[in-house]
Image (cartoon, rainbow, N blue to C red; front, side):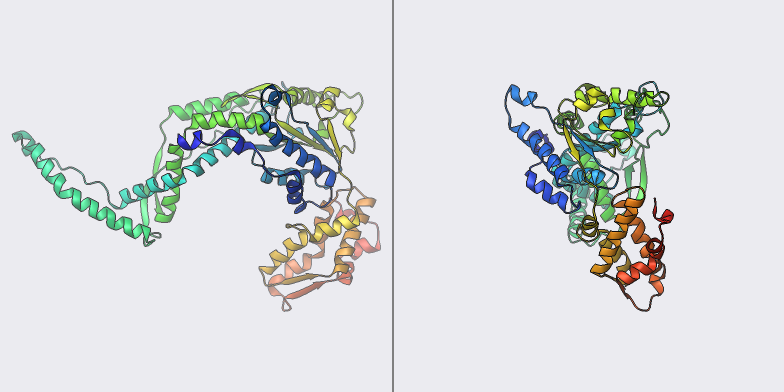
Length: 473
């Protein structure tokens, strides 16, 4: 297919932003943690640089994996979330605690690579479908016309066929019907183009989406086998079609998707996706500290160490079979993150430690950071509450003194109990605005001002005593 042949693999899986641009984009949502942002930005740029290499050196350069260390709520997972939206590459976020050692019931670590391959296929398929949208829209319009103006059916005259003049009669009928059919079709086409029929209800045939067989092959070693058998059964069984009554506008979207799917070559998509996953894939491995074994432990900890041993070959570089073909993980970038408040990075097995050469320590948040988190990011908490209450006509105004007081309280609670970082702000703000949220529909004065006195009144329990149980998550 022309569209797929002309689209090089590097365009799909390469991030064109410079490190400075990547950091600027992350700054819109994440306050502080400049060192972690810089490390991630450099790692992404190095993927781009490796594409420019030629000859044996291209295969020799492998990504430098990153280990992010920092207490909960300081921005590790948020960096992963924003990175996923930023990069034009297959990206998956997984939690190390979800996996078990081979032989235990649960997910095996090879499913990480299978998920990465799935993500790559979806991404490449969408890119291919976007490239054939114009052609698909034309074909979709023809199908809508077929619904409004069906092809005239040939009538059969049994007596005519008996006496041998059936063919002459059919030719005469076709000559009479063809001009009428074309005229009716062009008239409907004109009305479609003018948008006159968008809300008209029509009955169409659509393919029934196949439902996954939930619960089958749930065992870890049979996971990949389950996918393959499900696909095989899906290919053997004919696709069911059902009738639906939809508007022309909805029919156009359904038909466009169906026609775009027919125009792309799924074998080529799978082949390209494997290359993209191998060269550009990024895996964010969260909660890595939860599989670290502290000291000499027995029992369930054996499984944790087993998970580390199973993760090692994937991070090191190995070949994993997926339903789209084998995927080599040598050039996949792994970013691991963990709080390490109980275990230490040195509690990981030495071989795994060696596979994460870049260590970044995320700092605990201070009062100034909390103030900025409340107001600066595009998705800042105060902006969220203002937008939600504005739907009821309530105008919420925060004074600087109130923001400063909330930030100070968040610091105090984090110091006196568990440090949960920016997540503490969610608890405090929810309690602070509880009455306004409840009374919003009946409020007479729709302009609500939050100042330092308001904060102290609403959060007087935390101001007066150290019993912080209701503020601890």
